[in-house]
Amino acid sequence: MRLEMNLYGARAIYMYEMARTGRTLLQSIVSPVISTSLYFVVFGAAIGSRISHIEGVPYGAFIVPGLIMLMLLTQSVMNASFGIYFPRFVGTIYEILSAPVSAFEIVLGYVGAAATKSIVLGLIILATSELFVPVRIAHPAWMLTFLVLTALSFSLLGFILGLWADGFEKLQIVPLLIITPLTFLGGTFYSTSVLPQPWRTITLFNPLVYLISGFRWSFFNIADVHVGISLAMTLLFLAICLAIVWWFFKTGYRLKN
Amino acid sequence: MTHAIAISHLSKTYASGFQALKDVSLDIRHGEIFALLGPNGAGKTTLINVVCGIVIPSAGTVTVGGHDIVKDYRAARSLLGLVPQELTTDAFETPPGTMRLSRGLFGKSANPAVIEKVLKELSLWDKRDSRIMTLSGGMKRRVLIAKALAHEPQILFLDEPSAGVDVELRKDMWQLVRALRASGVTIILTTHYIEEAEDMADRVGVINKGELIVVEEKAELMRKLGRKQLILELRERLDAMPAALAGHGLSLAAGGMQLVYTYDTKGETTGITTLLDQVRNAGVRFKDLQTRQSSLEDIFVGLVRQR
Image (cartoon, rainbow over all chains, first blue to last red):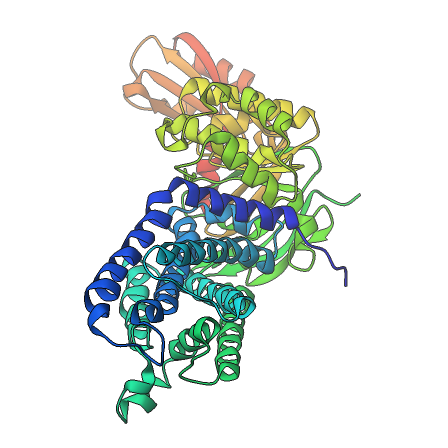
């Protein structure tokens, strides 16, 4: 078997998607930064000043990893889902399907671009939060690892959503009704260890608990679950998304008749 | 020599159960203009979409330049350019921007010289900085053609390229098609304007209800299936066909002011001389006469109706 790659193809999709971000800068970058700032004002300053430290970390700083995750997850899903759904909706997908690009290259282009945007956004939010609270990062390399893995996984999830959705409503519903609640319930603003039983056990079924916990560990060395489990769960999630995307392309699901 | 495209026993049944293509076999020769004619829903677009990889066939094989479209899709698709029927464009992009995407997708670097050349050929150069959404329908059609030509394909599919296009653009487009053919590009087009096929095509295929009814050299098709009519403009009205003229397959038209004789152009003798003698003997006088050759459209309508 010849090993060949149409890297121009993947790059063309990637650049095209990045150019789309440039055109929608306000929506893609400015709006998440503003909403994060609002979270800091409300939770960090207004409410946070009345809450004592959580496991030795000031509350304002404690919520930083959770907030980055909240934005990272929702923006990854929304960016990637819209990126592939829009060409399907307007019909320009014909060119991708009739081009000599493999499924891998298509995913590389779309998911790579969505993940890049999310990672940049995550770093911008981290910088923004520095304006409100001093944030120390205990394990910068792990922080970046979790950031990249999560951005990739959820961009893949968004890609799946964009392929599955047959209307704008479905496109909105998943981030709004599934991702956001799961993030809030996954310990964005609190440590799941403060929850009473049985809720604490129930939250362990929320996959986002592991992502947020692992990410927070990379900042403060504190975690709800062991970091190894967090990493394993992140990788498992990534593998599941990859398998679904692989199946979509193999069967032509929602792409080809 | 391999064909530009070889389609063998191709069938497509959609999930709804609709059978869009039924055992279609067709070879497209290198460098020809092939016109695919057929009524709406006949399977023209499905056939094109299967070759281009947009629709998965239910049965049969297709090779493009000798490359199987499934096993060796990269090599096959690299040769193909597609101008789709629908005006689906990247609304927010500029023409050069969307062409760069097209080139990239086909594994080519964004060569500004090629992009400029194609844009100029299609009179789009002045619009290079405009967002596509601001262009007229005809201009958008040009953008779609520009995208297909951006990656320099060897085989070009034009799916209803003249739908909703004004006369001038149509003329430009056909000029471009001729120039492309002259440079060695194979062209497969579908059209509703049969006179265009008649004007442009080397060969014609007629598809109806998913079946390829006929594939023929255009001239041969017109010779085989073309019929000629001799029309006699009468001096006086005839209420009924005179008995002496019965048996010639003549018919009365224009309220009895015309006698129409239909004959096969491929016949050994046309019978015109005998007929004219008999008309004179029957005392029928005519003031003028004309002959009319059936057009590709008449042939097409006749073929589709027979089924």
